[in-house]
Image 1 (cartoon, rainbow, N blue to C red):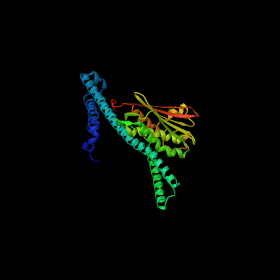
Image 2: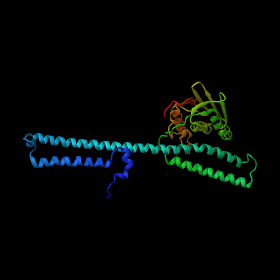
Image 3: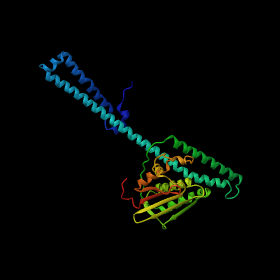
Image 4: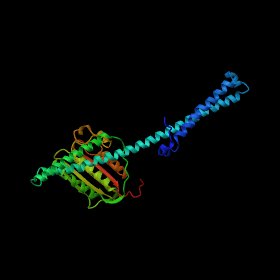
Length: 328
């Protein structure tokens, strides 16, 4: 067998803080040489155990046995510590892999919403919402719809192939207009809502609602909550999107009519892949609300679900206005 060279594993050795080959060499010496020395003494110096410990050299024998036991104990501690370091290292690598996977899953999930808006717009063009299409335009629209379907399938493959845990994200801190972000998301979903005969309304309290936070991630919060409301509101229902603020906080609310949620169902909402059985026929991965919860937590915010069973559901998100003093 090829001799192991510690230099081949310099990254692993560096992260572990000790050379595993040197540790194993030391353990081997302790677990073989010391017992062999004790056995050699027993065979060559004293034949009887009683004579060994009660004779003139009894104290020497006792010391030899004691040293042997200490050697075994020390070897066990070394081996145990090495295993603990290896397990810790493996766990950290596993967590890092999960983070990368969850970022991929989150991006894949969020791509579905803008793709859906594009698909609806292209289908409306195909149906003649802007007038009859020429042959060339019809071909271009057909090609776009075909490629959108391919993207949906690709995203679904990514989502279903890697279902690991825990997205961790770092946030930027910049002064943003949350009102403008929410309005843009409402506008993006207006066409989809109209096609489903839904009354989607945006009701801000005030002209501008500003806070310090991450613009892209807060857009994802608004996008996911509004998208869910559009998907799960029965035809002919209503969706109200509201935004308000006080001296220290900003509150974003999405309320939709429909069957509502029981207390037990509310507890499952923010678990990854924890989709409700009554909505199993509606396309989704079960990632959206867990992404929302992660982003809200990273902004030191709070999200709550309320509403009346059989009547409506309300998602209420509260953010502090200023995160500049928070370390992440």
